[in-house]
Image 1 (cartoon, helix red, strand yellow):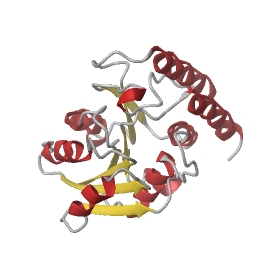
Image 2: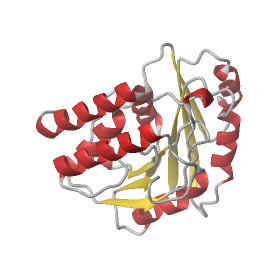
Image 3: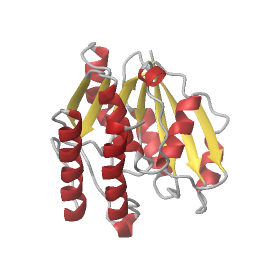
Length: 229
């Protein structure tokens, strides 16, 4: 089997090589990996690093001329990936690729079509309070609207069977891609599992990009896709 790792990249010069190395180092047995690196208009020298991967086997490097947001980068990545399974990986060091086997296991054992890696069930660095309670509230709203019991819909680590995207068409361009995925996964009645993952969150001084404005956008996205599409 082939795992496609979609990695949106925006101004991650300091961490890009490290996270790519960690992805490559993960032991998935007989499963092969391809990395789809989508640069979303970086201006800090990240593209110079990406150039070294452009011609390497197992890599696809795609460049956006302008910054369009994480959602836009994920959507571009879906156009280029060819794997049987898909996982989304941020280009910083907040999420540990060593969790891949745990996240992929329910799909490989035919228990799930989609798996969420929950930061609230696993171990890791303490959250910023605003992000912790904001995530909890957004997840609570999602659970009410879609009649489920997840603990972390805003997690980056979501794994999918490739066939999920035969039914799910994503539209969002920014961080609202996360609630959109949740809305459409549950509206299409896919089997969803949630597993614990580790998490080492950054603060804003270290490069964290999501803000309170994205929280309000996430709530609106959940409501909009519950009643309209």
